[in-house]
Image (cartoon, rainbow, N blue to C red; front, side, top):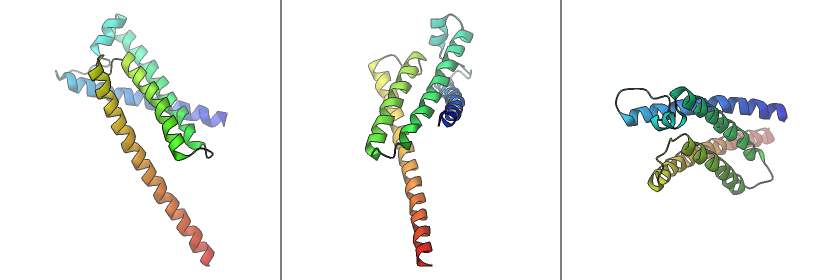
Length: 153
């Protein structure tokens, strides 16, 4: 289990960096001057240089990815209901995502900015949840079909 957790977290760390990169592409598009910004300009100002800001953002992105990956163990809890798993996972990843997004200045530092960012996060969470739920429902139906088929033989 510890080895699997380590591999899951390492994969999550890489995923966090990739997600951070896509966020920065989005930020660069939103700024709209044709340049690529490896971090939000305000973050570079806060930390005194772009490289320091990028290092901090990268480390926080690694933490974010590892947090999502580690939290995925919640889905392995067979003794919990789907509602409890979903609620717990959502709470953990929301706190993690919103905190790191705020520190990295991926959201505007205002109530409107926070609510807008949360709404986008919630929409993505719900969409991914529905896709994964549908995938597993289909997979379970196929397994049940094969079991019934084997019983009839």
